[in-house]
Image (cartoon, rainbow, N blue to C red; front, side, top):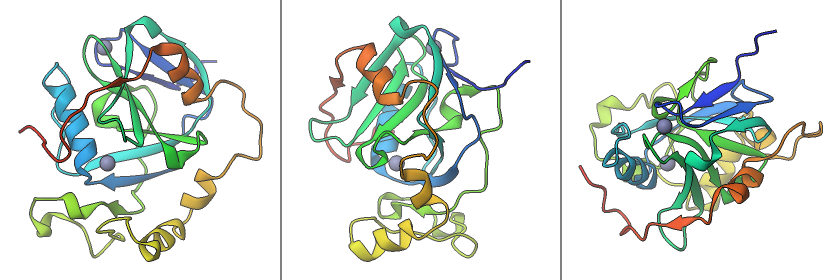
Length: 203
Ligand SMILES: [Zn+2]
Ligand SMILES: [Zn+2]
């Protein structure tokens, strides 16, 4: 059986295979941290990010991985809540962990790596518009919930109420078949902290 479950970098030096390759949900993220991280990677050969980035969430259950010696793990700053896995050669970003995911899910931005499966599902919300500098008319705010930030409890409650976000972030009721993203990150290398200045996104 030819299962399509592979996320790989653009040069093919590293890849992951997922036990559950269908996205649990997706968001459009306008945060400056995503842009800063991907712009940092773009200066090293990765793809330049858009202002708002399509982001898909998957169960953190990795069946197998390849090219671990070509992977590197970074955080933007020492107080970072996100940890990103890149290919050292082509600087594709293949997976992203965040503290709030609790290792139940991880994020992947399909435009910044390669998948042999469909990672596109209609986004449930646009988040962190506080960091968005583009045209308001480019944001489909009539058709999708928008969140200026997730700083306030009311916003977080409204966010968590969107199906299926809460269920997706919760621990799964079925047991893992593989390892989690955090297990993989622990095997790669010591997390490299980039010490980039907050908000200083190169253009
Ligand atoms: Zn690569
Ligand atoms: Zn983001």
